[in-house]
Length: 312
View 1: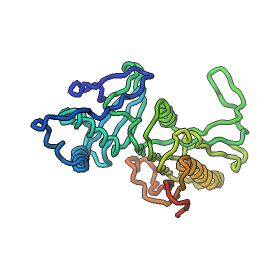
View 2: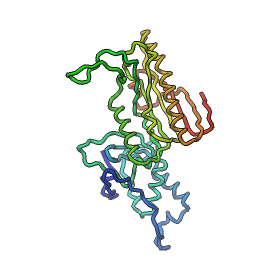
View 3: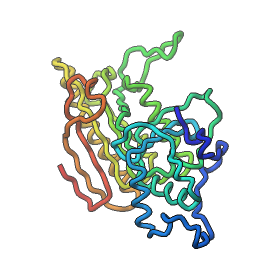
View 4: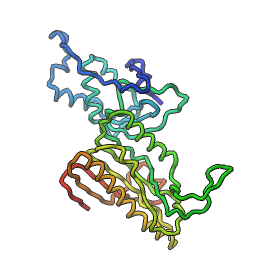
């Protein structure tokens, strides 16, 4: 995987773990009139428009501490690339362009780095802590617990105990990635304001004698802190024409909806402002539609700052 910090043309500085991600400071001083780049003679508003145009369609990958991130400047990108060489025109253009990049770019994917790939580090050019939008639609995480009445649960190859609370079988890889992302964001202050996540029901549910006793827990998301907007996309559960399966899924889906609504209101309301809620069913436009066994629609929940109201 390519990395900003590994691009010799940009000579990214490396910081040891535990240090704050370096911030580019606005350059001081001024150019002699005769040497001012023509771009800098334009008003700041026009320069930002030019930076925005030059970044369109860009998609970069970079490493930060123990994570790797994919950052897209918009949803329509052709291929991955390195940072453009024009950033090195001068310090002021580098500073202004990176400010514009962090304002509009969004994180669309992430993964753990191979622990053997090198030491933990932070790039001084681009940082997830300065990205304001995370829109990782490819993630899945759903935690369900039952009423404690389970069969024997194997903890390891040698010992069995009676489980009292057992998470449902979810995609362990995706679930671990979500925990890793939230842990990463907690290492330092973040400018995250907009968070979108797709969730999918597990293919199997925890055994429970009382379906009504199931609980859905998304308290992990509370660690994201105050946000301006949060959106959850939920693929409906797969239906099998057995009475027990129908009851399970019909009971579970409203529990998921209520818990996501609670968390969404909490995240947006942390700033002491009102919130506006909107939920709807829409077509599933994810890249994995062919793997969804015929699912064509998904439930959306959006909570954002505004006058307290709910809209269907």
